[in-house]
Image (cartoon, rainbow, N blue to C red; front, side):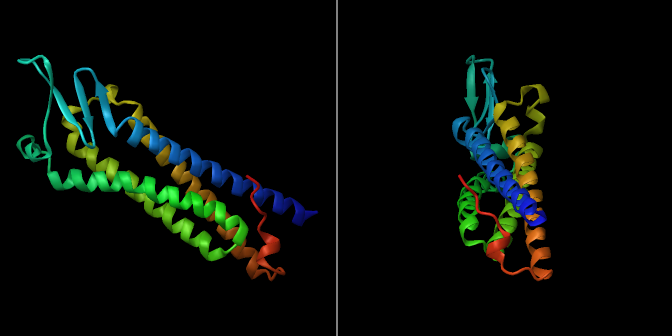
Length: 195
């Protein structure tokens, strides 16, 4: 009976990890693809990973700066490029880890869980680092009330990545503890995910 309850609990934890992965991918896709990475998206201001447009009073329209013009306003080009890479890369890595999460339920390989855990750790650090670098560079032109849904989606994706990291670490710890206790096989321990 206890083993049955443990299997159901681990099945539930696996489902939670899967849905957290889907949620984080969806939020990052919305923020970076649908909203085009625009942290501020107002009629008189558009600031994002690929846009830096401010209102020009003389022409009464948005005037967008090119990346080569960033040095004139004390924004370092290299930092913006690193921030772009750090924010857009986790979306690709999370898509791969989502596929791996679905695959690992059939193979039940502990090494794959360790790979998932490593990938989640890297994406969590990259997303928070890239967003922090970008905000640090453009903060003089942003007010908190101007932050758009893309910023909220990226912050939500960050929270889901941290929760997914904790859930995957818990799952891996459970697998390691049961292997140490000498239970018969890993295949009997890990419940399959029914999607």
